[in-house]
Image: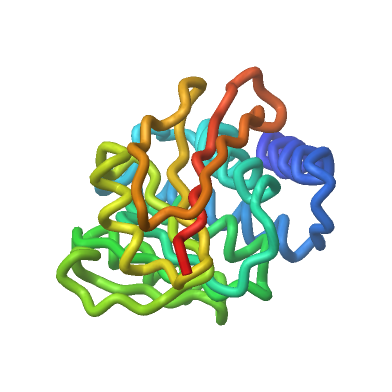
Length: 210
């Protein structure tokens, strides 16, 4: 129990270090998210991170660090959301942002629904299916993390991004290699470090043409 309280304090200190204005309730929600993933991962393969400490450090704080690099968003869609990262932490940290999760695998979809219910996330919508098979709705930003090669991810995300909106493709230390595309007005790469670690990340941000 003491170990978990220490981990919760580490989580609190880490999000504070990102200069995010986060309430105690939001920290509790982030920690409960990690606990739920730990519990479900005992029964099914949702993530390679098995302990709650690994989940907090490698998933929750990774997503929080990414969220800190994003501008204000009205809506965000996470294509191929898997266990709900980065979507759920972003939804918790940005309650003013409407977050949609798209996942084609039923077990992961059921986990997402359970999380949304348990955490009472009113700003979350969860869709079952493949992004290319669903009727797309325009969002302020669309993100795909590790579900496809960057050129393929671009094709998945563009239909879900409104004109003038952002297409987001996270990468590791080496930026995603996204080809030039006439449907993208401008693009840039953000470099950042996951809070509390030495892990370096990149984020390709493309502005969809009007």
